[in-house]
Length: 564
Image (cartoon, rainbow, N blue to C red; front, side, top):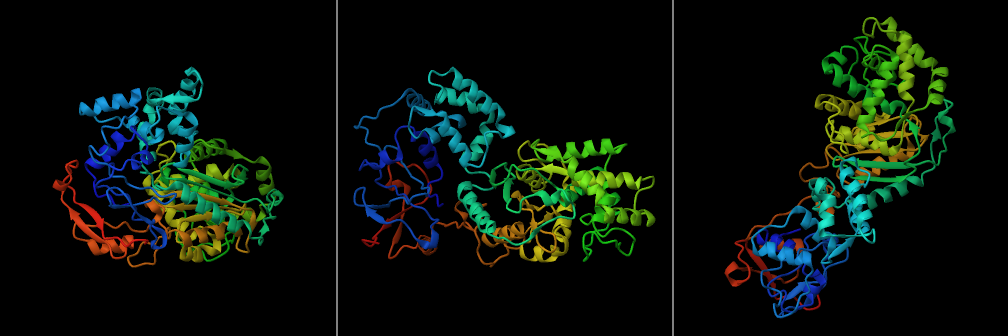
């Protein structure tokens, strides 16, 4: 959005918004002598229909779903017309005359109340959810607890005035202000979530693939299950499908296990035992590199060696240590254990036992390692259960450099996250890793339970889950979703190269890939952006507007074709 009056206008807009609704202001002919409403972000170059108004000068009628900047100048409302003021507005007016800027809590209340004296609590909750935040977010616990207590103390249990509202939000006002001012990584979250839903529906119609049956417990899952959850680095959440159904991580635990090992021991120590190269072979092959090390920690041989590096004096301690670490990564959301899957894996794990003995023969483990104990722990870690929702927070912790987005806790070191994402990018998708890196260009790890843990660095983590697998062991629907996601949004690592074809960028308000800035003399570019025909933009000196004391250059449109 172009903002021509950035200094006093925003202050005036916040301070005067409680007085009357925007639609009420438009109703006064004297309201907009030198103010216009428009937007620079239109799909396919279309703009709203031009109408004549306000002393013969034109302004735009806003399109549905668009946000517009109203530049309201001092003294523009006719002072002879009575304006009904409630106590909140009178106090705000008094503060304004005294030169006191309204608090963040006041501004938040005014933006939600839209001129009303009180607001229903559900209106605040609805507006909050539209930003992507959840009422159950741990960071908002104080706010939500106070809201419940406050509503019990009101006469109707529903409405909040400005003072009660401030009391509820003051403990979390910084986070709430960021959310409502669209300062999160995905500013327009609802349109983005709608696009995710559309991609989900497209993938849901696929019918190919087979549910893994070499582990008997996995074969019991329905092929119709399909879920997608995402969590951004700011804690915005969206889920669609069977996102609360628990399933085992299986191979999706491998990058998490590796990240914890590097976090505890450092990169150099871990890679004394494990390589960094893609193997080019099936994930369960009995094969080592030329140094007699597993190729990487994303194949079974490397994951078994990595399991031996987990801290703890016994398997019980190591398992508890891993569970606690994973719960921190998931923001204390669901992380469980399927004993039935563990027993099923151990009974059908002949190939992994063979790999284990081969690794022991080649002295791939640290000295003093109990190989059979390591295999037991390996099967247990593969049998850890998550839901799509909790796993998406784990992925978001990786996307956020090791900080859990919904708790703010540092869980992993930056070094461990960097190394993990690097290996997920090159080795995470079995024999499909090269093609996935080429077409999707994001770090990911798949598992035979049907999960795909996808990381968009500095943006979000995503968990896709659908049991039917392709011939390479990856979820059919998950691969389709990831491919379509990068086709629509510029999330591929190399989508942001200069001169590259445009895709939607949800990190920018309005979804445009680039934001254009216009200087005082850039009239032609401005006309092109707004796609106006025969429009003259003239510079208006601040001295021409007695009400406006800003030194920012303002533009006025003239000579607009009728009926455009």
